[in-house]
Image 1 (spheres, rainbow, N blue to C red):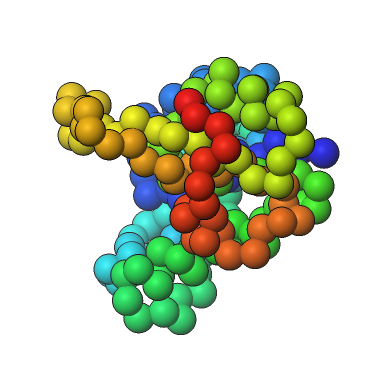
Image 2 (spheres, rainbow, N blue to C red):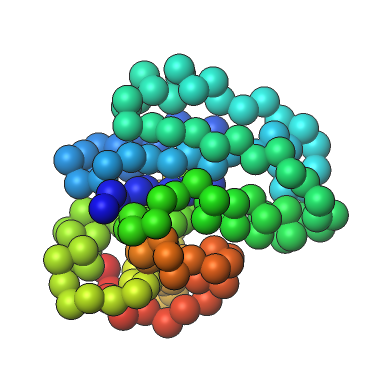
Length: 165
């Protein structure tokens, strides 16, 4: 069994560096899911794998190229759902966006706590490079789930939390 940190990535290098430091020694690999277009549709260059591996040798990259959807929301869902095809049965998968970073202590508590199929994390909401915190609201987007229970990753974002950060 491995612990995989899987997330959508669009060049947020600083967030990636924070993730790698926060989860050092805890996760077995970081799966960067990067698309060849933006969700709006224009093409974009993907980050070279050797550049990502300068941050950590535990980084793997999946490049999403199957753009059948026509709307930005569908493109995002398709790319997010492709994470399911990049993990191994039995893996624990932390699934989120690059800027949705679960505190290490909360992730450890979920991994060492009572057995669960899926754990949702309650994350604080910030805007504009952490200089504006939304005091009224949190987001429930990061999920920890065993890979065999992943059906559609986008649907996981709607689950009620079992553990709060």
